[in-house]
Structures are given as structure tokens and as C-alpha cells.
Length: 253
Image 1 (cartoon, rainbow, N blue to C red):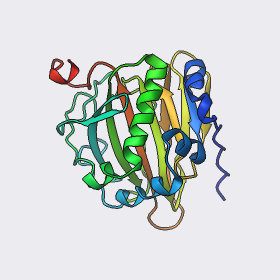
Image 2 (image 1 turned 45 degrees about the vertical axis):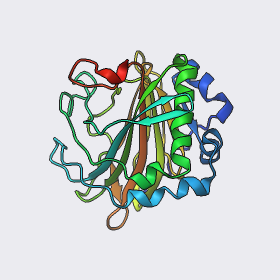
Image 3 (image 1 turned 135 degrees about the vertical axis):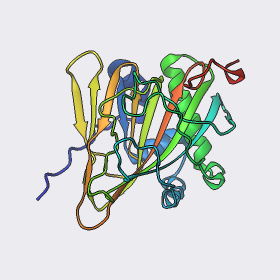
């Protein structure tokens, strides 16, 4: 019998910014996430079906076949959201030892997702949170839809291990989990031994992180019976520009 999951330490929506400033992280339960984004749970749940048609991630360097994803980029300026031309996802090796230094071109997020009522509200809410943490400014936001499944017998949400992303704010929202055990979330101070561990089990539980302060990872998942999966929406927000191998382009101006 598997051990019961660790309960997520819930942060009230009104306290998330202060939790980020004080501890470097906060966890919203589904009601709190809905309240912070100005959405209903039903509006958020309307997005869940779009995780059933994610293309395979063909860039996994560990030889696995357990990850599917889509990726798109936006600039959030207060209430304004601009989707930018499709671009590669890129990270330096300092932040991703497994996939760093590689331009990874994923299929874009579907137009129906971006046109949904909840989508712009979620992006605006994260932009406001990043501004509360770092000061009001444009935010270069990358959105990732992930499905990690047990096709290989085990699925790795973070094959690169405990890491930072090289951004200012990270949000990891659980969209759903079916037929799995594992997938424990771990957050540690970047400069010390303090940390916490918990399992996000309810859809729309959301972890938010000050990426400069903490490192994070999710443990592998295993099937309970047959094929299982874990779906997440990961949003990263960065000041100045998107990460990329080339010099800053016109988007940063």
C-alpha cells in the first residue's frame, strides 16, 4: 500500500505576494487559485480537455517517451496580453543541465485555449503577482502544457532534477492526475537546507515560486493500474526579455 500524500500547505490568495517575499513560495488551493484569477472552477475545468491532445516531446535526452507538451509565449503589460510569434524554448545549461543550450521547438498552444475566458485572467493574475514581487513592468511569459505519463513504466516531471528556471516567477498549476502514485513536489531554499514537500492532488492547486530564492522538483510518477498521467500548466515570467541564445531582440524594447 502506498503512503498517503503530504497535504499541500495552503496560502490564502491575499497572502501569496507576502509569502513569496517572505519564504520564496506559496501554494494556492483550487478555490484560492480561482479567486486570484477571477475565474470559476467550471471555467478553469473547461481547459482540462486540451491536455488530451498534446504532441510528444521529442527533445527528451534521457531517451524517454513519457512527456507530451505544448508551448507559447506572451508579453503581459498590466491588463494587456500580447501573444508573440512562435519561438523556441531555450534555457542555459546553468539552469537545465539536461536540456540547456538547446533550442526546443514545441507545437504551440491551441487557439481555443487562448480564446477561453479563464486563460487571459490566469496570465494577468501571474503578471500582477510578478509585479508585486519585482515591481511593475512588462513580463515575458512562457506557458507550457505538460502531460507526464507512465508509458515507460515511470514518468519524470522534472528529468533535470532539482533546479531553478532562470526567471523571476514560476507557477505550477495541477490540471489533473489519473491512476498514478508519486509526483511529490519539493521546494528548497537555494542557499540553505530549509525545504518542504507535499503532493498536489486536487486540480487547480497551484505552486508559485520566487525563482531566485528557491529550487524545485517533482518526483517521478508510477502507475497504480495501467497507464496513468499527471497534467500541469507551468507559467514562467521573466523581466527584460525571454531567454534565448541570441542577443536581445526588439521584443525587449
